[in-house]
Length: 148
Image (cartoon, rainbow, N blue to C red):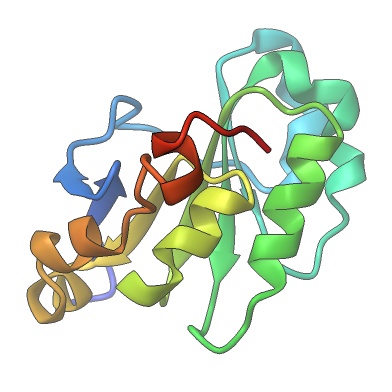
């Protein structure tokens, strides 16, 4: 593959491989954001070592934040996703990178709407792997009519 070609990726939404409702789009780095936030409809790349609080003033202009997961062993992105939700971000949160299906429940619990994985990972862990890891909506307590 040449440097000018992009690597094909696959989105996992609700356990299924899905097309992105935002494609095509150009992701901005945090440093580019300030100059064009007034335009709205923004897509932002957030590295797993960047402070998510710098995005708070721009939440109204940001539709999607994509958080980097450079390694499946690096869980800092989960903490960032959770922090963004606690800070009030209501848009789409996308985990991007080296993720495996076993991490999908954690991604959902920490506020992610979708995961962007490589085609190679999608081939290795097909859609049924992702569906199998979805948290079960019905629990023993809910079947008994108990809450909490």
